[in-house]
Image (cartoon, rainbow, N blue to C red):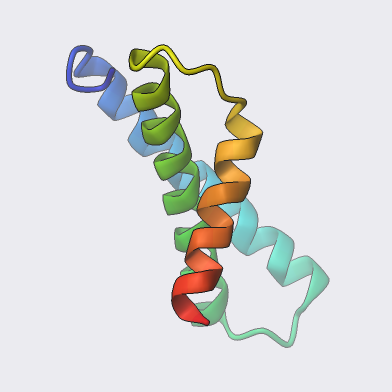
Length: 85
């Protein structure tokens, strides 16, 4: 969908930054002992998983397969965990 609607790319980039910042802030509140770089990395990873979720959801929709975004996010998070072991 982003390929067909380039103006959405700006919105998506801003959303990624907001997600990352929100995750970093929540980590800072919940775990003040966590290093700022660690929190930044986690925030970026969560934003990337969110982006992958919507990319995959869009591909599934184009293939006329109905999936719930939350299920795709859980699958993406599990794939990330499996890969890192």
